[in-house]
Amino acid sequence: MFSRAIARRQARQALAAPLLLRPCTARFISQDTPSGLTAEALESLTTAAALDQVPRTADAANTQSQRRVPSATSSAVPEWWKEYRRAQNLTKTIGSEVKSAYIPSELLTNPPYPRDITLELLMASQTHMGHHRSRWNPANSRYIYGVRDNVHVISLETTASHLRRAARVVEEVAFYGGLVLFVGTRPGQMDIVTKAAGRAGGCHLYTKWTPGAITNRDFILRDREVVFLDEHDRPVPGFDGHVMDRRPMVPDLVVCLNPMENKTLLNECGLATIPTIGIIDTDADPTWVTYAIPANDDSLRSTSLIGGILGRAGQEGQKRRKEAAAAGRVSWDNPVEVHRYMIKTRKAYEAAQEVWQEDMKAMQESKDGNADRLLALKRTPTSESSRASVMDLGAGAGVLPVRATHILA
Image 1: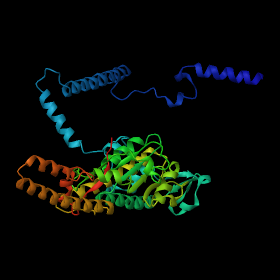
Image 2: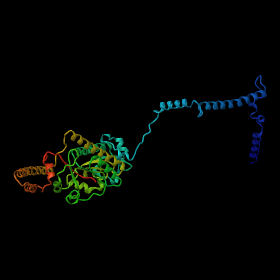
Image 3: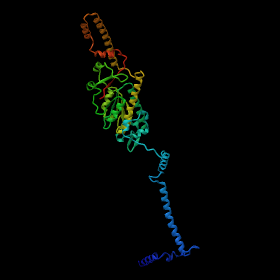
Image 4: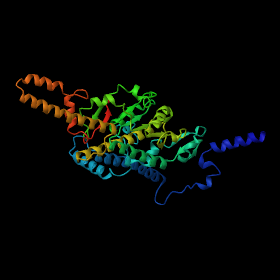
């Protein structure tokens, strides 16, 4: 302890001594001055050089700054503005281009067409995300690409091919004048089905399906109003009697966005041989629908994409049908019951013409025209439909193309 205190005291004294007096540094310090200069001259030269260097650099920087930034009243402002615009135009193409990656409402207001289907679009819309392995339905194993974190991943190639096939089916049904029903009963799917049905010229359902609306339609749908249209979508008069006698309409194709909650609907469509299109997730059975689309049915982004593409497909079919009608071609044949009614109306029209001709001849030969006129009115057929309806349908019965559709509120 005593030796440590002595060493500590000696070290403090050595460090506190001036630098020139320390023995350890004395040999490295030279006391000689450069030739021709005294110590006072060397000190003044060094100080002057140091003081002169700093102000000169600051003055140069200030001068350059004042020269490059003109004042608001300077005449060089227009020239500087032109130079700035020229540099901006030269460099505007450099770097990355910033675009909006996703707009939620765009899939509803401006959905893509079937020809725009890509794997990148399907992945960005989350169509590849399935359910947990514990909820897997082995019937759709051919649609599964693999497993990640115990969640099944749906094959995007399979989704793209099946979606294109379903879009083709919707387009052809719309082209041949069929009625397409879009069904989506989950929260948030109302806008999807309504806009898709509006584009495809079909019907929509976003509430619970009424059991028996197809199998027991004679009772449930008996009050639904039906209108008959020609190839140009113009109402055709004269079918009042047929509307009262025929059975209620059923859709020609059903598009279901959530088959898990609409098993009753799909079962009734199967009993009535109505083709169906449905989004089949990894927990659903693809045999429930006629045309399966393996995709995620829980994401609104996924269902919006699929519903929008199918709506666009129906819109393309309606456009083709109207173009064909404008060119004088009709893309469908009249149903059997409509054809029979038109033939029956044609015969009634011909019989009414004969009666009217006889009455007109009797009125010309008779002296009392009033009595004969009343007799002609009594013999005019009114049981099938009104006289005007018979005349409207009679001239073109058997050749007039018509199709029935529901009146949408």
